[in-house]
Length: 182
Image 1 (tube, rainbow, N blue to C red):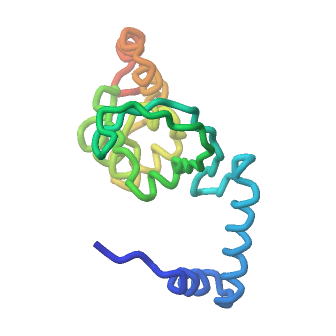
Image 2 (image 1 turned 180 degrees about the vertical axis):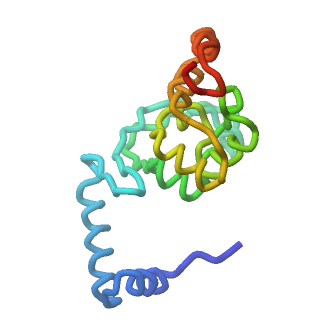
């Protein structure tokens, strides 16, 4: 496991990335820290990182599990605590975004396995993504992959599939030939 960066290493890294001097970066970071200290009682947002809040932990009773008071119940007084909640973007960047469950795009009339693979490669993995992609972009992906096809009805079909309206999708598909209006 890598060792954590020292304050000096952090300042040096930020100085290189921003083009500022190390002392200027240190002033900015120190000012941000002071601002967090001052504003935490009002809930403080650090954009892209998370939220610092001041919370009240209520008084409670606790059963001692070990030590000289093991088995005894003691009163723990109420107190203020600091909490930090990471932003979703920070969680995704650190932990990796949750995997997207791919839909079987072959269900769409006019899309075969090879076209579905080309769409997946272009980042279109779900019916919703297909429905939200403009027809011109779909045609561009087909042209780049050297596949024939007319994607005019594909977003409409994908929207029905994304909404789970499979009966309506089947009715629409019965009026199509190879994904085109008959």
